Length: 88
Image (cartoon, rainbow, N blue to C red; front, side, top):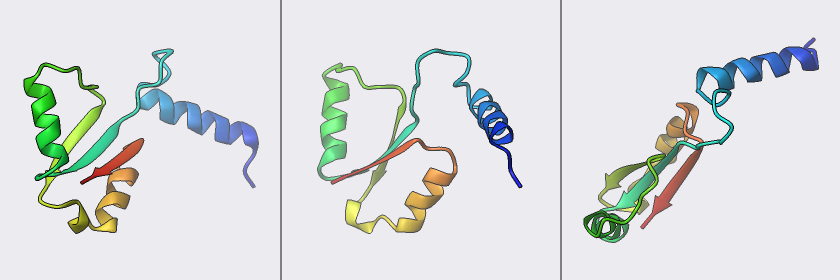
């Protein structure tokens, strides 16, 4: 049987290992799957225009957002992503 205190200790240890306990501000890790023909071109233009883009966003270019398999999204989430963006 699990006790609430044990769960809290595990959560604190998990967050400390990811670097959340060291800072007061939460910085999410977001993985963005961007369509090559639409949103990736817009993100590329924003970068060329020297717009600020959050460093917590990791961009992955895909040929088409409709071709993303749901297993890839689940694998991304289980490997530590706090959020997933699929844009097309």
